[in-house]
Image (cartoon, rainbow, N blue to C red):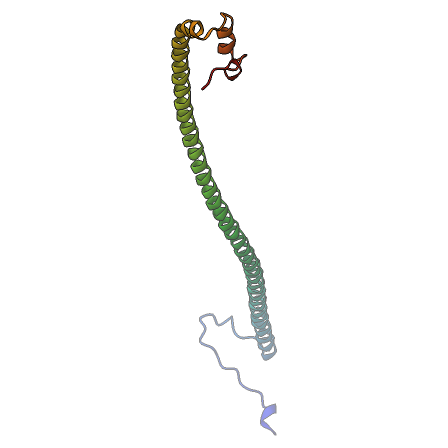
Length: 184
């Protein structure tokens, strides 16, 4: 006989309740299988839960990475657009400064020209005043000479033999003196 076929004696356990003993081997094996299957199921559920969490984390990291890359590309393109716009504005500013400087030069030229014009007008006005004064002086002098001549004309005409109407004609310039025979 082999040892496998020998029934084993049951050994009393140290449990406090002798009525509660171990069941048969079959029952124990079923309990072990149930326990193992329950533990293996729990472990499988836990492993599945971990795998789902890991997958979700990986997916979240992947979407975060993709979102970050997309946002980075967008910000890079905006930065490039901003740089281009800034260069454009710098050029426009430089052109505006150049235009302002040339306008300022033109304004200065205009101010100088206006000042010259005013000075010329003042000078012309001064000259005109001098000419007016000289003309008035000349007219006054001529008037004085004419008055003196008119006072002496009757004497002249009496001595030269002219008629009384001739001095008026000579004074008016109608009758030239040479035609009358008076020498200069």
